[in-house]
View 1 (tube, chains in turn blue, cyan):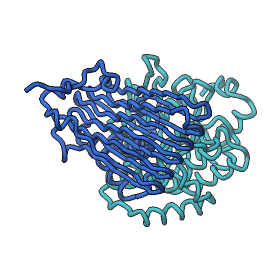
View 2 (cartoon, helix red, strand yellow):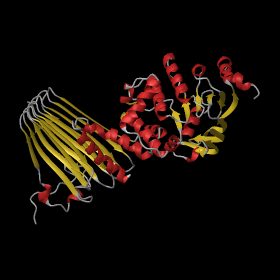
View 3 (tube, chains in turn blue, brown):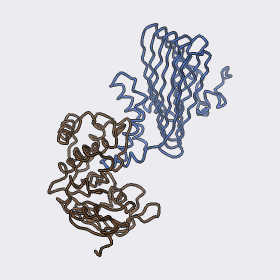
View 4 (cartoon, helix red, strand yellow):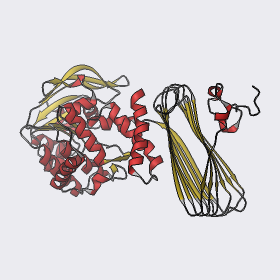
Length: 256
Length: 250
């Protein structure tokens, strides 16, 4: 069968740190499947996404691709945990109308040679819209976590306020994380911030916790929980918060 | 209760403890004083099992068990509390969550039932009140944004809640103003002054010993105990200095 659309390679900016080899056996139709979401003016929609061992093939590809239009004064929230598949990828292409808000909290966890990534393209197309994206990545083995976030602010989109925050926590040598913020700003009265950092487990904190009686596993779990918890602070549903945290932490417990 | 014999330990190949022997009986508060670099903090870390502190000889028997054979968290479960000179900040983890997990981990290690959230809060409130400490502090993240004095008070609350059999307190008085010193000292007396408990109180200054009266005072120098006496030894150190007191024949 000839293919009109070719699979991307790592030369494509949005797939730079991805595992494009994993795409090889994939059905192109499945690859090109997008979920369209429209948030009507003034309304709020929340979407939660989980890629885990329960709903994905550990050696396969699991893509979730969203196209989102957020109407005037509307709010879209996306919270997701990527803890499964060889390549687990959440991709969001999103536009904000006047006064709209996009809130995103993403968590990636994984070991082996897996790649787990959030790739977002957020277009502020009208004035006074705001967006806030937080991604926390915890990896071990030869696992990789990525956040590629592009923000476009068109000429008319004055008073845009856009923020991105990425932090990576590497539990073992060999794991890696990549943050690629990309800002394209054509308006002059906007606020865009992005921050990225990567670190390791705080061994001082771990000894302190051990001295109070916590096992190495328990202290690691507590520290990782605190670390990834940042991504779920804006999720206003405690049960859902708990559920997403547990999926991420269980993955950790199972493999370390 | 705690028996240290001929202990030697090194960090990065450098010998810090050099044949240290010391015994603390139940019901005893034993102060350790000594000049900078004598090995005071190293002693507390070696007892706590901090990674990087390598024991090269000697033994430590704690409540009949080989302490050096245990992991740090097992030492805590066996009743040892290490008070830190510089308590560590843990962002994103509240004191309540941390201490409940710690207490329940210790209880589990001792084969006891874990406390529920409600039961734990009751214990925490009692201890905070006993120590005249603000319960609100327990809701905040572990030591994050605490002043030096608040961190040391928080250590006392932790000690109160965990209720250890033995405490090694490393310069718990450093960085405290006079009022905080009294609160911390009273805390030590309240929690640890008990016929079944013991304390190794590492300090530079007499002022803490005015509040927490030691039964014995030992001087640590160059990695070993060079002199042991009663409370009067600390007073003499304060007035005469280490050099003069240590120069006397033992």
